[in-house]
Image (cartoon, rainbow, N blue to C red):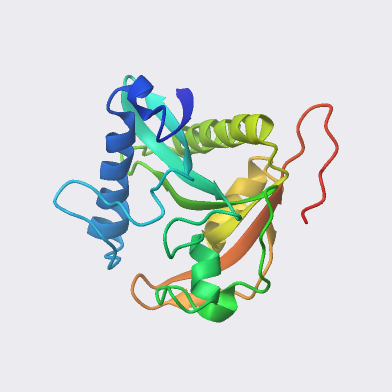
Length: 203
């Protein structure tokens, strides 16, 4: 498994990886979970796939098998900021406003969204290796961009899995139930501690 990271200015350096990731998102979030989010027959893509976003993807044999999207909490693209802040401000009705316990705007804190791994990974070992590769990419982005913390919405069950892999996730809000996919979600926060680096305080 290989980790790749990029933003929209460099996605061309990785062949079809970006569009494979969008197709994987469509397959999982739309076809499987039945989320009512923008998509066509091939891809799921929303307003947060804009030039402020970065991506960490896991590739195996030339095929994207997992990935996630991150962006600074200082992001603004048109009328949109980042997903949880838009939800808190009432401009995104798919997430409860109260899910985000505090307003966060800091160049050191980035939001993570659309974390997905391929349903074709049938073993726990393969799924864990994919998540680890995606996490390695998040640390690469953090080192390059000065990120001290990631935060975002996560399925409650996934937090336990990521903790077992060594990622220091903590819940930062009360869980809520999504009736559309019958899953429980909560806001998570993950400090980034890079080798030889002290944690930077989010402003």
